Length: 468
Image 1: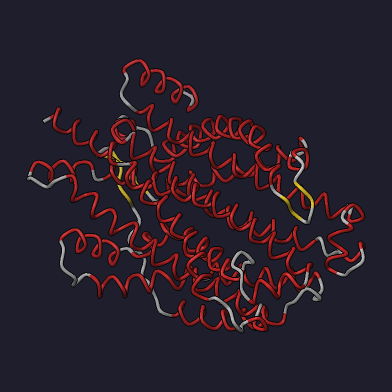
Image 2 (image 1 turned 180 degrees about the vertical axis):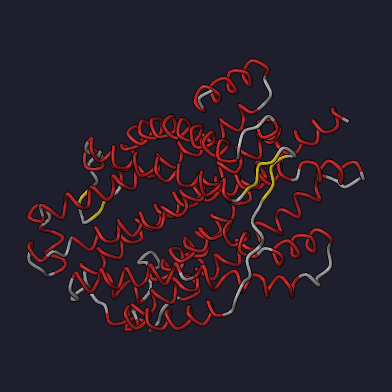
């Protein structure tokens, strides 16, 4: 029997018998829809800046404010920043779709185990998952494209480069929508394969097959050295630098941010080994889980570290009124750039927080399915549901707060190095509080995601009680 025929027959049987796997499919489609909607919108913004850079003569106010001729290529700065925002969102979308694949395997544990029992190989299971993911991705991408078009009028209230956004500017050409759709589709398929590599499907069920990797301190040393190099590059960059040097600096900053992957797992492992001695059962269980597998904890919270960098950079935004904002206002060109960076950063944070919370929700949902038997056993022994919620808060929200604060400090440091000449009479408290408030919004999204899985845990306990 063909894989496509088998997948179709299994879905028909699931709908006919109402086994509940439809909820897993719905969650996966919603996650791809959200991802593709944001991808289309961000790509539309990038397309807008590229189009504007091709006709600089239509923006005399910007060039007059910056004191440069129209053919100077200054508008390419906005294009680089837009691509920078796209680069921030790609890992989050990949993580989200990978979590959806793992959730699909965990949520259909009995079905997949039965298929292995009757003779299907692990390769057959992976191909089935890829086919299911492909169908879900196509549905989600189509819905995401339609939703992104419907949302374009909302962005007409924004102003970039002294010119209000025209709705038609962020509508992609047909090949643009096709390109973004193919990228999201490729990410979904690649993430499903990567996600299935993390689990083992056997006749007895679905389990994680990767051993917790060792965390080494050498990554910390490399990160510190590269960070010093990055700060030197940022200090030397200014508006009069060449486009090539600014692009190189942006690439160096991006790779420095990526190197946080080597720093934070080590810090989390050391910190939570120390915090595990604090009183509290929920806290102790969460700390031991993090110490045992710090890289998985980091993988779950990594996107918030990157968005923490963006929030930290907002410390130098012109929102707060002090000597720094007055210095920016005195130079219309600098004020235009930093005002647009602030608006773009806030949009990136909004999109990023939505994607991150969705990824956290999918990861926790998958964890509930994987630990269903343990949860039911503990529940029968008298463990209350509030214990699981408190443990999840410590295990998920705690590391997210820590890693986002690390990113926040790094981003604030980058911003301050760029504006070392404006560090007199600066209202640091107001600036850090305002930028930190944006970070707190991301934490609230995380709490919502953790709370959203509680009905699923209740349903799991109810099914276990009914089967007992």
